[in-house]
Image (spheres, helix red, strand yellow):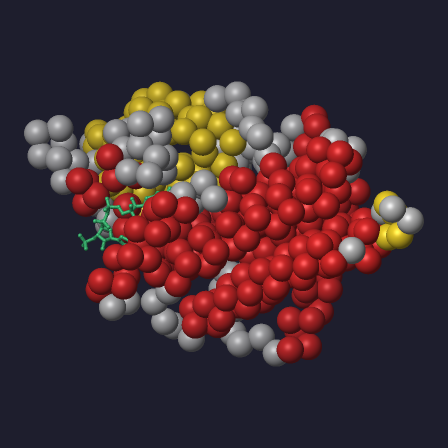
Length: 385
Ligand code: CAA
């Protein structure tokens, strides 16, 4: 159970994150986006501040913070550059959750401690070229060879694939003559310097261009027995648990993107003059800004409420999907309005709202599309979750 953080502590950590984001991230975000530069030095600095161990327990050198504080910090980083937020978010949410819940003491010592200290960066590989939304249909294979495991196949669109030190990789461990569907998948802890781990070239993406996304070839990658996380055949369930935490984080990331687009819009509408007055004095503009602000506030409030319920130990699978669905669609809507308010300037790369618009789009796609979130929510309604 996470330590309940008091208001003063929340304030201090959020202020630290905002100042760091404004000084060390935002001034460089457009350049990193243009050049597709992944600033590992900045991630390492965030690690030193504890931002890579926010949700890891204190006994493993994490900050042991609650989900609510974590989301507030993530929003600040995302408001500066969503590409940095995604690297931080995946590391904190998915591999960390998996190790905390299912790692042995030795695995936690070996991997969780340096992750929490920010000494190593972790990622997660579930999707494959032919297994996106239907994640359980993945085909990469793990085979036992004596005491070792040998992994082969390929993964797709894995965040941090070429920049992480450690990847949590989901592969099948059932046999072709006895396929077990979702229960035939296991999770492996894979150091990225292992022989046979081959990340592809970074994908040329619409948004989040500074974050590293790549395919991975697993070429007879040999791992010791203790690279298996938890129980054989439970990897899909572990991935879904990780994604419950991850989807809340994507919600906060989307809120950060939307908030920044709103802030830029408010400032621009005060400065931009047309027909003899600032455009903020037109009621059509006022209504648009009011709607943008209302949706940002609603998305943030929903995310914080669900985070508080998670901290109280409730199952938030359905609610985390609602958070991701609403926040990501809010980010897309708000950034679209921002472009409209900026007019011709909004369509130019010289102004920040164009990047925010591109960055917003993927929040409706990764860690489960909006359609997948609706499926999870509808299933939750049926089961009363
Ligand atoms: N927590 C725990 N267990 C869960 C779970 C959860 N949230 N969701 C499902 N499970 C369990 C089920 O209970 C079931 O186990 P039992 O049979 O024992 O009950 C097992 O997992 C299989 O579940 P389903 O039958 O529901 O599986 P499904 O094949 O119907 O798939 C799905 C469900 C929700 C559609 C799932 O496939 C899904 O979420 N798809 C989207 C995948 C996704 O989000 N991919 C993102 C990849 S990461 C990424 O985006 C890149 C990045 O790095 C950012």
